[in-house]
Length: 453
Image 1 (cartoon, rainbow, N blue to C red):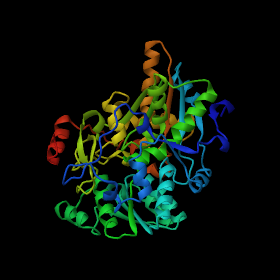
Image 2 (image 1 turned 45 degrees about the horizontal axis):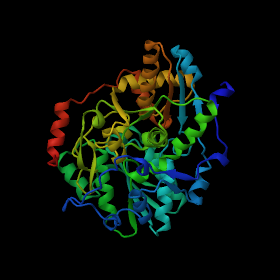
Image 3 (image 1 turned 30 degrees about the horizontal axis):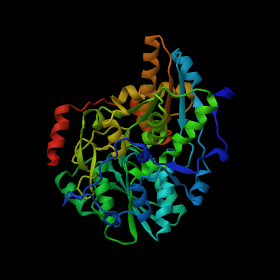
Image 4 (image 1 turned 135 degrees about the horizontal axis):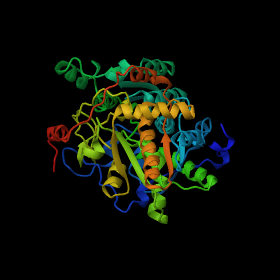
């Protein structure tokens, strides 16, 4: 690799604070509501599920929040993460555009999820919590949380979406290695799981169901809390170290992004790369475009409705203002397990509604084709989720070439695909079907919530 293709920061340059975009949003997001009263929920009402410091961060409008020293110490084992100029990819495309990617796969979990897992485990430990319950889709979040909990001396119970539990046995083994207990969801451990299995014995599961199971267990024990790997404000907050580093790295290149791209499930990695740059648009008049890329089989941003909905299938969470497909949505069995969630994070939802963010949906096979093309030129096998960002980056470069212009393109390569090789095996065997959800199907799921305005 040409020495000029990797843009590094020193440990001294690593940000010491997380950035909270709420401070700079022209329209602040609406508050979460109590489902019973439809009134804004109080911080105390969340205390059965989350530690108070995370609740404070969830509801904060403070622009910058200090990263604790113990969290920074663990961050320094893999941060600052590198940014690469994709010269080989550019050459293969024959494009005039300049393509950069921020690589988040170089830590113990193999993805960006470690950035918030470490923080959440730390704050739970500080408040005397002994056990955490959580959900995981593809297993990246569960893997990240497993090591973080083991490091801070916490037990971890992971409800893994059943289809991913079957598709990705390596992730389960990885979580077990880090001392976590992993069960397929829906399970017989919870009332929610038993009810679903009674009605749908072969249920593939969903992130919404797994969240319900994890929350049900958490609220039964004062020394157990629940942890979420995406969607919530404090999760996006922790991920902004990605974008803050990227700002400094782009400055070293002498370039500035015309477009920034991230794949989209609940919003954690897209938020992480984009929020510090969105601030530059809002505060300093920059003109960068921000593109969130979701699967055509799970199109909440492109076909969903902006409304109050539950974050889980059983209706245990507060009502959140977000783009949603309906909390009863059951996704197709695509291999980008981290993108199979019915709702979008509140902050990204508001920013999309206000026109600061764009969204596009793409088919699974096209994205795997893009991932293979990237791997053959850049040498990194991407996570299936990251393939969606790569495909959109290639779209941007090709469109610029058609227009006779060039663009500076930055995307977040949120993780590697070393634990997801079976999905590539199916791709090469031509056994990776496409699926596009229709607007009629979306409307049916939304109507089933009974929550439409």
